[in-house]
Amino acid sequence: MIRSLSAAFGVLGAAGVGTLVYANRVELNRFTLRRAEVDVPGFDGQLRILHISDIHYVPGQWQKYDWLQKLATLKPDLVVNTGDNLSDRRAVREVLSALEPLMDLPGCFVPGSNDYYAPRLKNPLKYFTGPSTTHPAAKNLPTEELFDGFEAAGWANLTNAHTAATVAGLNLEFSGVDDPHLELDEFTGWSTTDPHLRIGVAHAPQQRVLNTFADAGADLVLSGHTHGGQVCLPSFTRGSGRALVTNCDLPTRHAKGLHTRHRPDGGRTHVHVSAGLGTSATAPVRLFCPPEATLLTVRGG
Image 1: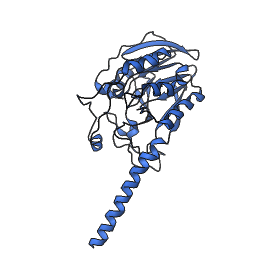
Image 2: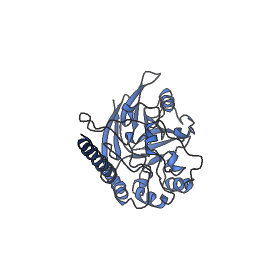
Image 3: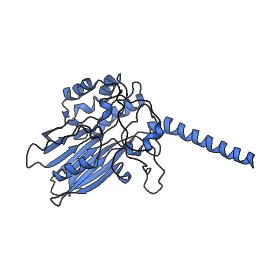
Image 4: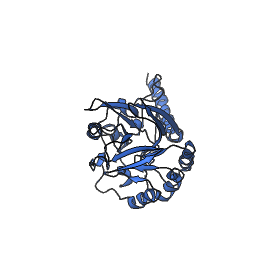
């Protein structure tokens, strides 16, 4: 009996190690392009948005670097970057180089906590006990250098800011917030009253922020932060894993992809949550949740 139990635990231990190796060596670099469509009633046109998020770049991640560069061949009308670009203070030059082809296109960005503070080593199991917090001794990242690079390329900084732009012949309104996960968000409204499309942008999809955008009449909200759950249970019917956590107050069923919210005016706000392209440098695993970017096509409904 003891021998049988020892053998069973040995098999389970080997399976656990094998899963960890797969999650770190294979899934972590299985970069995936998702495609999705959104129908917006009354919208007269078509807009192709490339949504990137949670790159968490560390110097020397050349597979990620090459994949990011190739995204420009999709020729989207607009690039939206929803934050957490860094996982190392030395990464700014490389991540800006990786994104350089995309920065030739119209774009906008908001920050996440890992654009401000470097991750710290901690017990990874704490990720499953509730939203993470920033350690008071966390080291600052070169935020200004990163943002200067984005802005020099013409990307709009939507950190608690709003702006309007004409993209692909469409009048677009953008309103963004600083990272809700750090409770730095402040909605500043819209610039004009009659755009073709209103787009809200935030890093963490906290419910209060999504509700604020919906109440203000946003047609579309883009966010990241959740990593799609990062370590998910397998799902053979949905084609992707089932999230166990979202690292915020968003329900796990909305950890990635599209969902809708009803607006006070009777309309709907579409929300897209990106599962992101990376992980914290201190927890480099993904399971049943490959890194991704999304090409989102917005059409008239």
